Image (tube, rainbow, N blue to C red; front, side):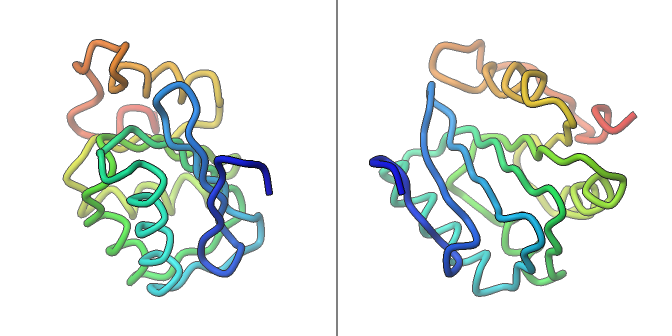
Length: 139
């Protein structure tokens, strides 16, 4: 593991910070349960020093329990989240996670597009914008 990274969820998740954005990488093929989600959110608090930040979450081919989706949606440590995936299943899981979020939440298949969207929530970004419905990026 590289310096500045934190492992969570029994190694299924690795977090780091770059350019004011928390990057969360989930191991493809992982199953994420409530305990994994809670552990990952504790790691977010640790790596961010308790300051809410935007997050890029790579969740390609990751199965997430309903309880874990709810846990992620209640997160207080993120300003906005861009979920990066590659399949229709990833897109459906991201849409299901959106139901209970209290922060901007979008799904992307392009890392560059996801980072560009998140930049508006960083200290150097405008802090404005995003899709109020959280689903516009799905279209």
